[in-house]
Length: 300
Image (cartoon, rainbow, N blue to C red; front, side, top):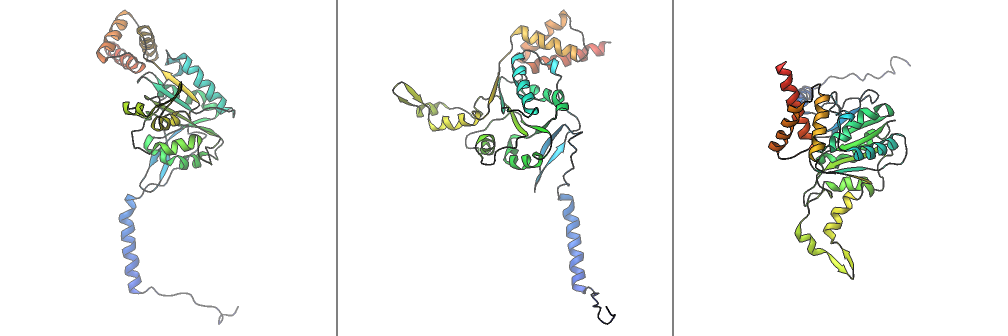
């Protein structure tokens, strides 16, 4: 190509365009602090768990550097529940059929602790965990899309799950469990804890909707709608208040786990602690153990 044929694309910016570009840069500089950070790249080989964080424009998975996973051996008084959920998750990480899990019952009896304790126990077999708040379940399809191609098995964990009347946040969960045409990815399983068996409040007026056809009882539509959500969890695990012996055994186990020594004074104070707190649960036993071991450590 001759020099005469070459086209000169160089040009000068007009003063008006220069002013416009300068103002645009000023606007971008002001907006930049308000923009969400770039989603971190996650190495699932070294990251065991993430939490879904919701931003003004989009959500992202935030790796958890410090995990709060109780030791498996410290969970006492719930042996049957431990056996059932561990077997189900071992099926899951092995690529075998497994059920979504709903853990319901008394507060402080080890529902969430049981789920979290399985993460380090099965991490070497490929188990990973994503913690999602109830209000963020509307983003469940986006969350699943980000982990479906990974060669690991993911538990989506939601703690203290419950819905109020008129709240529609349960619909994405209901569809994901068993209702959406797409369905969940094969490497995703949902574990949820709740103090409510049917995840939604029950009202006396709803009993008036019940119909009797001969000797058969047909619940009303409101009741059917509430039951239909919990029914989509294939494995139900129920937790009940502990009796005195179970409570003391749990407290003794936590004292040993925290490096303390169990003795008769500890037993008496554990009972007094439960009386003052108005109940016996694994959470109360752990709180007593922390107080007891801490006080004994100060004395030494």
